[in-house]
Image (cartoon, rainbow, N blue to C red; front, side, top):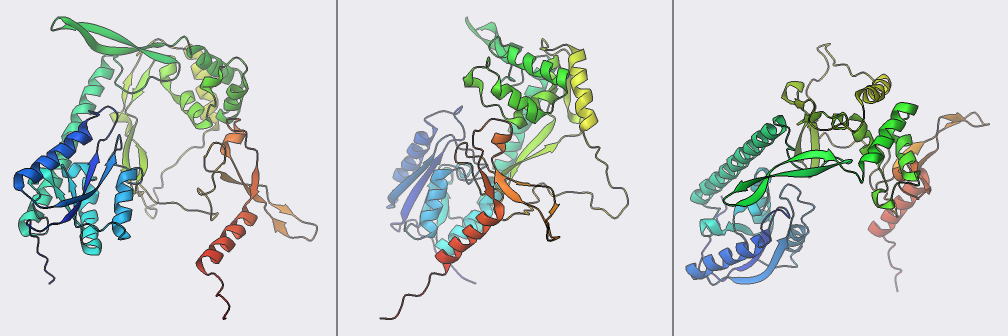
Length: 410
């Protein structure tokens, strides 16, 4: 069995990592974390040399790829451009998600010889039996703390919704928040907020829903209608088809609230959304003033329901019943998700023509990449990139980069 020794008295080279999760937190939180780390180092009289500092402001620990400072730190450590022994953080929660900590710590130590130490444990050695036990306790503490906080927040929001108070987050398009004040300790403070129509935008929603009821158009055509409408200010454009589709099924526009319809989590750095059971969804009728009459809303939903394909559950005993929350991507075309629009930066989508037969009797299907924003007029990029040509070009470029021709002998 390999053995490693960790002696606090050695002049280790260290980096400091600081992070706060969101703009709603104390802006001085990273500075306070640094001050705490430095104070602990001084109190212990440790001869460690701080060689660099990395920081992520307003970056959630749930998304590793979005934490630029964190990724830069790991990249420099793994490529050996930064020679360090330790990563110092105030608490282990600042470093990463509990579910990923063990594997990240293990990889850093085994492949780069770097330990992650925390100030709140006085930089205890995580490789000893005592350190491993402490690490397990840290993970349990962080997990339980997160669970309790999430439970309390959800409970409070659900109670607010049942009282017809806005449960939190930005108001839906077409509405705005009105604060209801109360007196507390001799001064006026916000008690709760309610939804009221926003005169700047409610007419746009009424225009959209009225057009949907009148024509029966789908979300793509309605999005194009909004983007091309001359009376809608440019500051509200471009509208996206997915957003319009969400508006067309959100009962808030008929005055009702349907809340907690989905659960979310982050798996493999991707946000995963799952529908909750109907009995777990909070429904509050007459939550706020409606923007359209119920008969208009019912007409829109009747058309949408007629178009919707019914989903049936397999009950033959041979089909798999549990789906993976993040099953990964099944790509028919090699560059799907990688080709980006040069104007709006969205992923260009592959689109195919119908199968046709040539004069020679061969069957072909022409496929190209197109910006999805061009379809609903939210982007002016009408360029269509042939899929076969682009795929071959990219493969040739990769081959040239990976396997360059040998230099001629001299």
